[in-house]
Length: 118
Image (cartoon, rainbow, N blue to C red):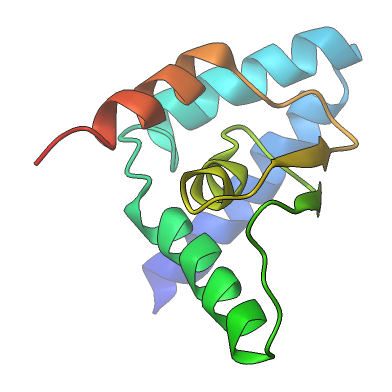
């Protein structure tokens, strides 16, 4: 338990330090930290894609048809996996917004490649 509690404290300190940088630099530094030490080391889209599929199923369970519809996503993050899941299931598109310009083409390409793996 002690190791876990120390990790969030270290993460909070790092985030606070990075927040003092100019915006453009802070996004790039935080992205680098996430790619080398955080959750973006290995991109595995399965879990997030499953969330999109589950949402799709819930919409259908309410006697609604999500096919051909346009979705609105707040907080897209770095990889647009939920919009990808919706599109693969028949949505016309997704309007995605985020306060921060986190979306990275590299991560989107990795997610696209990994969905083709067995």
